[in-house]
Amino acid sequence: MPATATRDFFIRQRDRLGVSVWAGLIAAGILTAQTPTNAPSAARKVSFYHKEGNRNVAHITASEATPQGGSLLLARNFRMETFREKDGSEELVAEAPECLFDMTTKLASSPGPIQVRHADGLFFLEGRGFRWDQESSRLIVSNHVHTVIQIAFFNPRSP
Amino acid sequence: MKALHATLIPAVLLSAALLIAKPGESAPAAATNNVDITARGPFEYDLKTGRLHWSEQVVVDDPGSLHLTCEDLVAERSLTNRRIESIVATSNVVITLFEGGVTSQARCGRAVYSAASDTFEFSLDNPVVTRLDSTSWADTIVFDRRTGKVHGRGNPRMKFNAGAFPQTNPMQRK
Image (cartoon, rainbow over all chains, first blue to last red; front, side):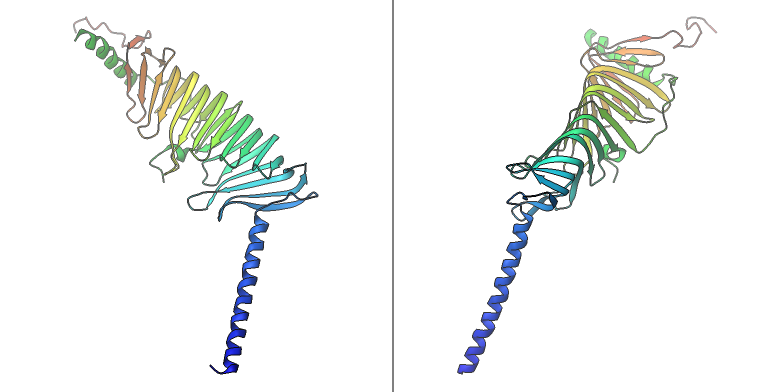
């Protein structure tokens, strides 16, 4: 191989490697941004994904999140979407004007109102006082629960 | 044989009487596409198992079809077809059913609804089914919504109200 061709080959490899490194760094940056590691230091809008491996488990947003010490955030206009393990489609959407969210345990709770909508239309629910445990996928609504269930979900023969 | 007759005959009578029962007087509300469930709470939903659980002063309202009150209600949802497969109501259960213009009421300690068979099974705390013209008791009473038939299992007995039968003397020759 002539010296020029060898030099060109190494330049191409260097450029290719450079592109890969940058792509890797960008991807890593995105993943890091989606998986919160530290609570924000001041009130600010938040939007992040809770992940298990590469799978999105939940998307959590708040118009304002204020650190409460430790891993706790006081979230205003809290909204959480959960995704099905099977196909990643939207499963549940919960909205609360205000709640405490623990970034470590993934627990959301509030004595205030909550509205929950099942993405497939199974039910709409509202009540006061709730606790959502992301790890166990369990929702508890404490008081004044009002649920509206579509009649089609009672009929095994309906589409 | 005697014991079988003792159980079977009242059960058949119970079924027959409930089938010929007159329409109830109370008019049900117009049917909708939704079922309303309210509870004092708490309510718990486990997404992994598909179990929904309402507690304390539970009221289920399916306008034109069913009205139920109880202290505890559990619905199990199929994880494959996402439909509700069964509902179990317990403690002070009162169900008013509106079926084809007929109103009936059941009181029991436990009521189980199976979506696959479209049946109610009433048990515990002396289940009783009341119609306009009769009252029926049994250890377990099963109501099939598809056929409208009611079966009593274990100690079935029945009381017909005055006026349940035609005002003629069956012993009188024509």
